[in-house]
Each structure stands twice: as C-alpha cells, then as structure tokens.
Image (cartoon, rainbow, N blue to C red; front, side):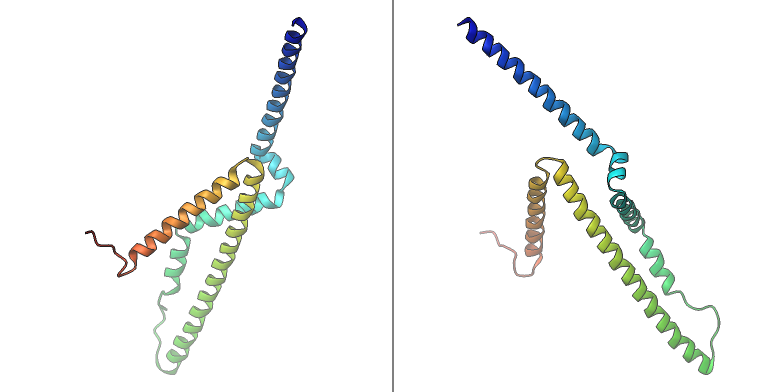
Length: 163
C-alpha cells in the first residue's frame, strides 16, 4: 500500500507540473494574441486595414456624410441670365449627379472595407478565443429573431387582440 500512495503522490505531482506547463503556455498565447505590436508584425496589412476601417467608421459616425451631402445642394452664387443660365443649370445637374455617383461609390467602398474587416476580425477572434464563434452565432441568431419579431409586429393587421 505504501507504493500505491507514493505512486498516487507522484501522479499528482506530474499532473500539477502538466497543469503549470499548460497554464504557462496559455498565458503566452493570450499575451501574444493581445499584444498589438506582435499582431502588427505578423499581419501588417490586416492591421492597416483595421485602422483604415476604424477611421472610416469613426468619420461616418461623426457625421461626415451629412456635411458632404449638405454641401452638394448649395446654390451657385453667380446670378444667371438667359441661355447661359439654362446651360449652367443643366451642367450643375450633371455635376450634382456625378458628385452623388462618387459619394455612392465611396459609400460602397466603405461598406466593403467594413465588411472585410468585420469578417477578418470574426475569424481572428474565433481562432484566438475558444468558444467565440459558437457564442457569436448564438448572439447573431438572437438578434435576427428579435429583428424579425419587431418587423412582424409592425406589419399592419398582425397585431394580436387579447381575449
């Protein structure tokens, strides 16, 4: 029985050493994942993309689009008369359409960049944090169901009447 007790003590010591080793390894992984400098060294273009996407997002949230659109419709300060006024008004309409087209294209580019950045961030977090992808799917499902319920309740004729 003395050998069995000593074997159990040895097994417990070995298990402790394994746990300590695993914890140190996990700690190193967490430090490397959360160290933005290391991430930048490993993936410089992705980090630049995140920075750009973040800047675009902040600019959008700060109301950059509203300011640009209000500047588009400002009237010309030069008084127009006769035939030149007709040409000027027509050319202003073309310019306004061109500006609107450029702004729409820029909005599409921003949307695509934000989408790519979000997809990469999801993948990165999914690879780095155990259980993240499962929790994200659950949260996205909850959000979708909540949105569908709100949309269904706002449709005329879908209100339920209490009895």
